[in-house]
Length: 336
Image (tube, rainbow, N blue to C red; front, side, top):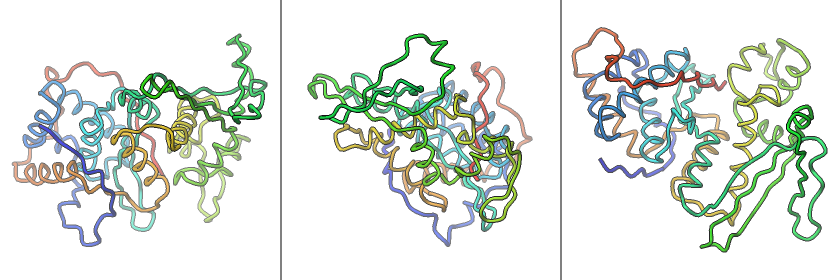
């Protein structure tokens, strides 16, 4: 089944028809409908791949109460967009499906969000990059910049045990292109503080002042709108509220660096990579839900309407024989 996403971004219409409003459906029942099973089998190249994605999505939704309130077909459309349109994998951590709650009306929207693994994979899949990577920089490793090229000068500490005891002061990202581009290289260094300020400005879910209070031991407080926040809920909501050396928090920092590095005018970008960065930027900077007017949403909508015509079945998981063994999938963060 050949699918080419249009990758157009538009807001949800104010007069959206009622088939968008399917939040009351159980996701497990929805994805086990015959119409959905057929759609996934045709789209993913067979029943085995469809069963694996089905079990993964059920696991994801079952672990996140807020995601259960989102329309099932939005969750499905987000997965199809990445699994088919970009050739990425949820199981491999290439993307996540995030619930966004509209504070004005309480509606929850499910949106796909690319992760650091996905950005790196899309770059390498373009065949333009010989290597692309990002590293944390510890205290004492940054030695300034080349006076002519302004390239960062990093002197790595070789002893890993010694290095891990030092605080993170920044992140270094670079890429090297293949011979077709004469091995062109580019690198970027941002201080840790600059990354946090960037997240504070562009991430809907992150507040730098609250993060600082949590780092200083606060368990609760009041935000600038007078709403009470709790540290444990903030940490559950987004990896940005993690400690500096937590893996999930470090991945968010690395993702920021990859987006800045690949956003320069010299970095070759495939259509899929360009679309992923544009979509991710739109989700970060806009307080309203982002709805994609592409083919995947239409497919999911048609499947949902077809599924709605089927007689209701008792809620059940797919037969165990149809589901390959899948590693435990962590619950996606909740964006507030």
